[in-house]
Image 1: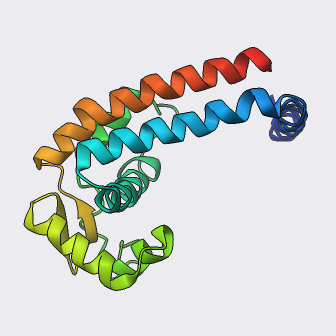
Image 2: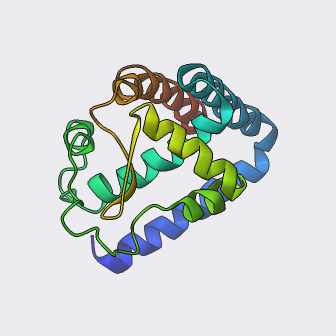
Length: 174
């Protein structure tokens, strides 16, 4: 399939999804909201409180972007490859001065949590060994921390299971 054909198929599929969402909104939306509620509940329970949960969520998202999305071979975007890359620091060598460094300001903007609260909470996460803060890489998840083991061993399998349930319900309507 050519690039143009893929674009046409995608637009057609996107229009179909928009149409189904419009027609079946009352069936779909409660399940979407429930997914986020259940996920948030799991994050809060595992990480201790809502502020740390949302901050760790942003740090993990950033870690994923740099270590997986920007380094994965597009022919192998499997879960096993992603998990292997998750457990590596691929960006440490070229992160110094990079605009891709995660900062307190970036977390403030992404979470709408006041800057001083972000700074205090992230410093607290650093004291617990959950995150690493350095001039070279900015703020990153400490993959050797117990919290990473909870994320990989408990949170992610739970999220994956719940996301499959959500997608299955949505796919039945498509």
